[in-house]
Each structure stands twice: as C-alpha cells, then as structure tokens.
Length: 229
Length: 318
Image 1 (spheres, rainbow over the protein chains, first blue to last red):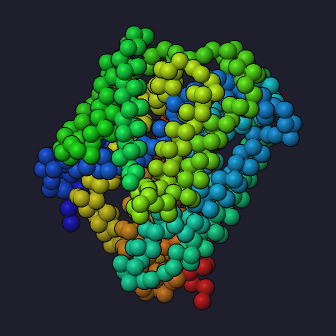
Image 2 (image 1 turned 60 degrees about the horizontal axis):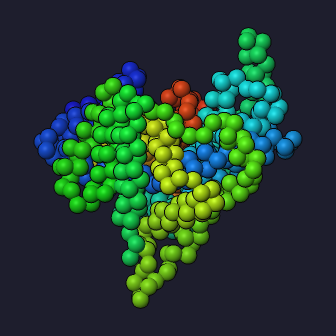
C-alpha cells in the first residue's frame, strides 16, 4: 500500500483551506501525486498535457460568450428586468422555482444543454430573479443581489443533477451500466433511470421549499440592511 | 464528417481573438500576463491534437504559473453604459431574445436530428459528439443572427467575449485542470488506497452500516475528486458490490443508481467541481468564492440523508 499517493489530496485540501490560487494548487497536487505514484517528471507532465487536451470539450461553454456579450451590450439584461417587473405575481422564489421545474424536466428528457451558467443563468435567470425582488422591495442592497445570484446558480445545478439521471442515455447511467456489466451484472438502463425518480422528487421538494422560504428571508434582509444604512 | 476538432478550431479562434484584444489593451496593467495566458490556451485548442503530450503539458503548467502567481489583470470593460443599455432595450424589445433562445433551441434540434444524418452514406457529424457539435453550430447561427440584427462593428463580438472571459479569468481553465488531476490520481492509484482505508478501517457489520458508509463515501470521495464519475467505480467495487449486494443481497440497480446520486450531493459541496461551483461565481461576479457552495450545502445534506434512506429501504424491499 503506497500511502504517499495521498499527498495530492492533502495538498488540495490545504490549498483550499489557505485560499491559495486553485489553478496552482491543482497543478502542484497533480505533479506531486504523479511523482509519489512512481512516475518520472516527464511522464507526469505528459499525462497532464494528455488529459487536459482530451478534456477540451468541457470548454464548449465559453463558445457562447460572443453572443451573450453582444446581447448584453444591447440591453438583454435590462429588457429582462423590464419584462419581469411587469409581472406582479413574480417573486424571486417563484421565478427560481419555475426554473427548477423546467430544468429538471428538460434534463430528464436528455435536454441538458438547455440550461447552464453562461447561456441561461447569467443573461436571463439571475436578472429575472433580481428584477422580481426589486419590484417587491425597491432598490436592493449589494449583499441581497449577490445572494439572489448565488441561489440562481445553485438552482441550475440542483435541477440539472437531479433531473439528468432519469434520462436513459446520459453519461452517468451509461457509466453505471458499463461498470455493472464488467462485474457480471446486466441491468437495462431504464431500470437505473427509474430509480433516479424518487431522489428527483425529493430534490424538487427540498430545494423548492428553500426557494419559497427565500422570499421571506429576502424581505427581512432588505429591511434590516435599509435600517442599518 | 464534422468532429470535435471543428469545435476546437472555433474555440481556438475565439481565444486567439481574445488574446489580440488583451495585447492591445493599455488600460490593463497586467496585459502581457493576460496575453500569454489566453494565447497559450488558444494554442492548446488550435494545435493540441497534433502537439506531443509533453509539449501540451508544459503549456498547461506554464499557464498555471502565469495565472497562479500574481493573478491575471482586468482591463477597461469597453462596452456600453447602463443608460445606453436601457435605451437600447427600450427600442429593440423582445428581438433581443431571438439569438439568445436560438442557441439552445437549435442545439436541441441538432441533437435530435443530426445523429442519423448522412452524406453519401457517411455520417454527417461524429455520432458520439452530436450534443457538443450541435451546440457549436447553434452558437455560430445565433451569432450570425445577432450580428445581422444589431449591426455592430466587426470586432465587437470578440471585445464583448473578452470582457466576459476576463470576469471569469483563470477559473475558465480549472475544469480541464481538475480532469487532468483526476487522471493523475487514477494513474497513481489514489482510488485503491482510499477504498482500502474505507473498507479496512470502518466497521461494516449489518446492511444499514454498509449503506451509510457507501453513501457517505460516495459524497466524500466525490468532494475530493470533484466528480462522481471518478468516485463511483472505486466505492461501488469497494463497498457496494461485495457487501450490500454480495453479502446482504441488496438490489444492484437501486444501490448503484441512487449511489451515483449520493455522489452528486458531494458535487454540490466541493470547489473541486469547478465548472458547477466556481465558474458561476466568476460569471455572476460574486466576491465570495464559495457563495454558490454555501447556498447548495443545506440542499445537498438533506438529499444525502434522503438518498441513504432510499437505498436502505428500496434495495432490501423484497
């Protein structure tokens, strides 16, 4: 048992606790792990390069930036605020609750690319959630704005994670199936996907309840900050 | 056949443009660092498929050094003012949504239709990469429509992309860097050591204890690796198959499907899952690096408990 290979895990934890630059921490942790695992430096650097290059497809999210930036320049966020402010029933919690439902259902149908932080949350969802709070409470303190944005991003993640596994051809279901097959257990993807439904329902209830509570807490937070200021 | 290489060239061109804009930006005190960083990133896209892995690795480490020591800078945003935007929004109204919704809409259409499309008997796009390639094509169409509608100067899309990319900064590269770390963990056998620790030192007498250790282990190991996919084979081979399924006769479909979801609870709580938890912090311009994680932790903990109970009650139902 080579305990030294855990050095990378330790470096990552210490790095995050000390709030060092994560890019640097991860690089150092990778090199240390490789060396501890018996690779030489050249092999470690090559392994780094190989998997960085093989994983370039995750950078696809950035491809949409010219479109989003251009639309922002011409007032996309402002238009969204204006539209939402006209819907009097809209609150931050309800906007995000609706998005949670849409995100979970579309992800369950395999349509995971319909959401995302760059193409949905920044240009549309966060401005909608902020505008709804503005209509209720007037000008928002910066801390309240930031909290609403963090909830918007979190809602996208929760909706995606606990929706996508209901789709039979998603990566994680295929991975589970492949892994079980290697171990001599053959299961149809549909059986795996069905067992993702109870958790999906629970996720909607739990996170949805927090979104409903968010409305009340935002009101209190705005009032408190205004009193102080 | 259109392959992922098409996407890489597009990304490479975008980054090359961002590099140029960065180099010419005198308002950014660290402009040469930004230029070097985005320039090297552009090279990994344009030439990564042809470079020896050692050269790519050297580039990646150089990027980490440039961004990690002293950080990147940020120039003048170079965009419209708040008043101009309100005025523009008033004039253009809902037309602005056409390109914004065209991108996901076409990406969806492409995913559904391009999978079976052929040209002279050959597949038109790589069937394994239909989703990513469709998104790339949809983005190009969305950009073309936006340009036709708004008629900005030719350099505007790149300058605006640079503005957003600068707000994201080095976090843009972190997901790929973490994937590389995962690969090195796998090469060095970190997973084996961790599963040794779990199975040897933690008492697993009785099905409930085994389920709890499996679900918690999935979440914790996912938090360390940043990815439930990396944790799943290790924890499932280490605990779920020999104990929950083998000794206590739990249903493997339930155990593995919900076990994966227990891992996803871990994903919500770790900065290692950078594309979900760190990238939006940058994109939404939040000062607290852990802002998104903080919001997610309560949901994740409750769901982890729910998943643990679900495995226990559903796996041994018969």
